[in-house]
Amino acid sequence: MSVFIDTSFFYGRITPRDQWHGLARQVDLPAAAVTTSLIVNETVTLLQGRGFFSYAITFLKQIRAQESIEIVYPDRELQRAGWDLLLLHGAAGANTVDCTSFALMKQRRIRLAYTFDDHFRHAGFQTLRGPE
Image (cartoon, rainbow, N blue to C red; front, side, top):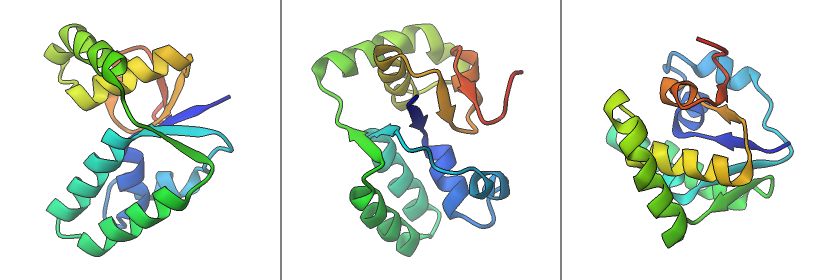
């Protein structure tokens, strides 16, 4: 079974002061995980924007070398599916990166996201935070 990994999990795992750091560090990375280049970009941008440039560079080097995490580069079809899902989930706060993640998860029949973002639960996926 594959797992999708979101920005909030990466950020929580990396950043000691994050509210989810403890839980993110307790969770083992699965043997088969998927993320997107959009998530990688969002994580790097978030780390850099919060003054953790060295963490951002370390994360980028590690994620690119990590063989157990597949990085998907959205093509035109996946990006359009994400934009379409924004019409359904955008009013609840999900952004285009979230919705492209949802589209990939639906495409690959992935039910579990390593995330602390409630938008994934609201979109019908399982998360580390459990049911609402």
